[in-house]
Length: 265
Ligand SMILES: [Zn+2]
Image 1: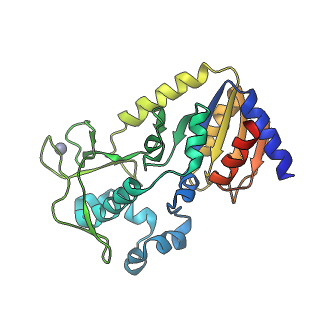
Image 2: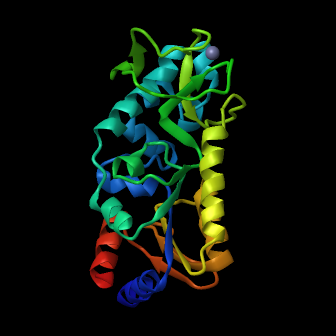
């Protein structure tokens, strides 16, 4: 059955004029990145937060930039290092070969690292910073390093500052309960993507590693495929496609894309 699903998915890709990738956290797993699935998964990836009793939603709360900047930057500084050091798995290159454009909730910059230029980062990017305040809606590329003590997960030494007012800077990432996020960079990317998508006649949407807990990516994939195309859903745990012309591939990103690459070659 999975064999037939791969055949059908390969047909859809071969017959499409354009490919849109909608990627969630599961996309990075084959590059060795953690997928914080539930509190236990998060604590497995970050044992210090288990000791502190902090869940992902709690550490990713912008309030810490105001009340405990070293704690806040410990989390994001560590992830900044991790994402800079990570090499994107071969699935990225396969998608690039299909000329895909990207919509993602990932803030890790892995698509750009793999050579993509047209990426819509709906939750922002860890490789960009803004003022905590914010005193201005400017967004800067993140050019600094943050030293993090792995035992306490706290940042050590000088923290990134806003070039405009000298106050604290923070990643330009949409966090939980975030009223201070500066959205224009992501919004411009999304507007460009929407304009491109509406111009496509036969679009295939490949949704990869997007869960149901934060449904932003799934919603985009379903919306885009309902309008003008078909949907391929690659997901190890929740691959079901409910309606319409969809194909379900219960597999990891790299394996599924490798298999599809062989069948579309
Ligand atoms: Zn400022």
